Structures are given as C-alpha cells and as structure tokens.
Amino acid sequence: MEINDSEKHDFIVRTVLVLAIIVLAAALRLAPHPWNFTPVGAIALFSGAMVRERRLAFLFPLLVMFATDAIIGFNKLSPLVYASFLISVGIGRFLSRKRNAFRVGGATFLGALQFFLITNLGVWAFLNSYPRTGTGLAACYVAGIPFFWNTLAGDAVYATLLFGGFALAELLAPRLRQPVTSRVS
Image (cartoon, rainbow, N blue to C red; front, side, top):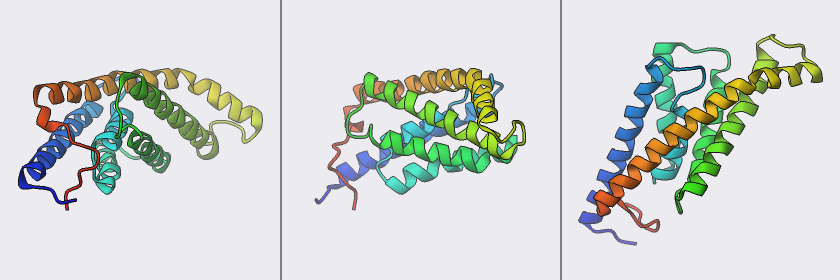
C-alpha cells in the first residue's frame, strides 16, 4: 500500500510524540517512589500498543531500562526484569488494534501479574533468600504480595496517564490517529 507524504509526516509526528511521552515517563523512574511503583510496566505496554514499528516497540523500553539502570544500578535479576518487560511489550501489541479502558486494564493486570511471577521466581532461584523447596518458593511469593500491589498500582496509574494522555492528544489532533493498515515504506 502506497502512502503519501502527508501520511508519512503524520506517522513520524505520532511516533515522535509516543517516544517523547515514554522518555518523560521514564524520567519518573529516577524520582523517589515506593518499591515497584514505577512507570516501566506501563511504558512497556504503551510502547507495544502505540509504536507501529515492532523492533522499535521492543527496543525502546529496553533502552529506557538500560539508561535508568546505568544511573540506579544493575542487579542479579536485571535480565529477568528486562525479559518481563519484553513480555509486557508483547501484551501491549494486542492493544494496538483496539484500545479501550477494559482492554488496557486487563493488559495492565496481566503485565503486573507476569512481572510478579517471573521476578519472584528469580528471587527464589538466584538470590539465596529462600530455601530451594516448594515451601521456599511459596514463601517467596507470599512475601512478594505487597510488591505486587505496588506494581499493579504503579502500572495502573501510569497506564492511565500514558494511554489517557495519548487518547486526549488524539482527540485534540485527530491526525495523530492512524489506521492500523498504514505502513511507512
């Protein structure tokens, strides 16, 4: 499908706006916050849903994490955390065709849940904090429940701001809406 210059311009403006919103949200990761109450899960969902170029949708949250981890610090679980956010980008891809509050809410819950399951498994397996038994794994998950609620709350707040803010931008500037079938060649 051939795209005219106006559509290419709109695509570029839309992509730059989405990436700028992600960068602004990423800066909040560096601000003081309760444990796990960060914008990164919402950024991954938003990137998956809004960035049309698949490679960029997956790459950008990783770059955000890497840049902020370079300041905050890396840890033994960083690879698992990064993998979890890639899964959240994949979940966000399912929102790219149809975004509404119900779907964004479901994706937000699913993203927080998989983050909780993956990272707590990593704590149990790699940090020697719990015995390597079924009871130890269960204890690890139980101890992580407060962090799950913080993750879910942070993801919900930031997903509301990101998706809601962009929906408002689309209302104010309808040219930002882009048909799903459009592709820049």
